[in-house]
Image (cartoon, rainbow, N blue to C red):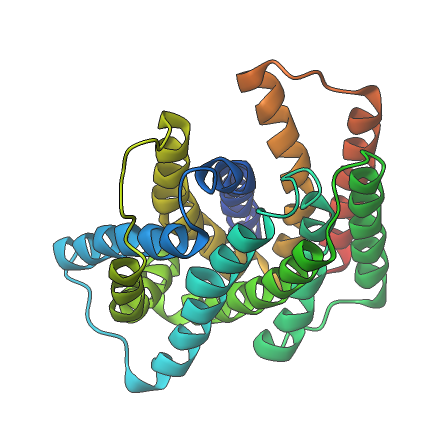
Length: 291
């Protein structure tokens, strides 16, 4: 019979997988949302909406305030995943397609693992880095083979997004071991609320006419699911299963996104995508073993 300590990593990978499934719709939803909203307004609005939901949870469940020593880490989380990643990706997706952004999402597990070592004091085995790099390279090569639009400005913005996101993931996971996953993202949203609320007012649209239903749905998805619900599972997964190891599940995110597009939009699934997905799954399993 499994012990309690053996269940921790298993629950961690399960929670992490749910988080990745939720995040899989983030870039396509952002791509749709920026067709109707300014990137600055989209970034601030999604943070404000998620913060209001987070405040409600904290009040209803009567959570105590974080200690002063936790504030620097919460600030890093806020700058990384509440402000940095959403803003930089929204700006990047004005120049590149959601498909091309897969190239950079393939690098996110590696940056998360690196920050997990630097901030979370994790020490994966050498073979872990081999599987992580090979898996990331496979995702990037597959994305490049799709001949998506490229832009130097968009690419640089995505690089910045991946670095800030990896830091925010690792810092939040480390803090989740003390505060809890949903508490971390909720308090980070609260911390960012004054700035994001002010920004939302400054860039408030002059008119709401002409904004498509799809753009509103995109805003709703990234506000509720990408900005809050996904992190509830993701931070819990990283905290229980290990930042470096569970972080490799992000290698599957692009393929989950493409599969969702096939199911919801009727897009065809190429045989090469199936083959690459199976290869990436193998890399994730290998990374898990040596994490």
